[in-house]
Image (cartoon, rainbow, N blue to C red):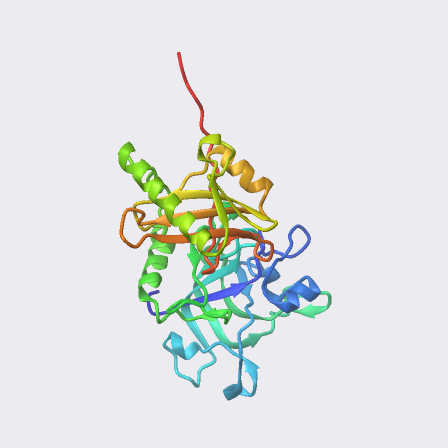
Length: 326
């Protein structure tokens, strides 16, 4: 598995068994224009097998045909298929943005060129026969539920998946190793229950928060905003930044470490949802060092996610709390 793993990125669906009880989102201009793509049946059982489609790039070396470079999977260039491959399927989350693992084929056969479906199966949509690039037995196939799709694959960063829908991952063996453990042994590359982000020492926590507010105030004043504090008013944000007719609500989260894990109170979360246009989440990491780092997250209508200018997306996990007493 270590030597034969490939990532295929497609549109996002819940079931990938057709459009009768499902919809497809993302995945390219064809899907945007037509409302369907070749991947709509990627996890449908056909007599004990599945057939998966991805849209690879056109390769001039092979007559301008869309091809998978299976030689990167340890096969010679004169071969047209390779077996024993782990195909990891990914898709862009329609709500939060970001690319996530949605499922996989084990012991799959991957083809250089698109293959026509067997005549014995009805793999069509609107009269179009839907080809495939990979096939596997259904016993070797896993499709993750919506809630289970929490392993993110970075895009367009060094050593990560680029714009292409096909990623051979040879540049990122550490991530491949993590995914291998995840698939074979259920060891997730993410931490399912991150430790509480709250600083246990209350005096130190106060210092972290004070420094974080200073960093945010300095940043906005640099760009001509007048910043005032409403921290004691319990309005659901900490600062107001005003510039001409623009009035931003700034919620500040200070962290002493480098990881971005913070909590929002019910009031903060409510206001974040109610006024997405003017609400900002300002997260300061390494707040007690000489070089604290500020990331500002604003809601993007394009991605439908809280996004930083660096292109990072925030994930939200809503939790329910209760007060118990005698």
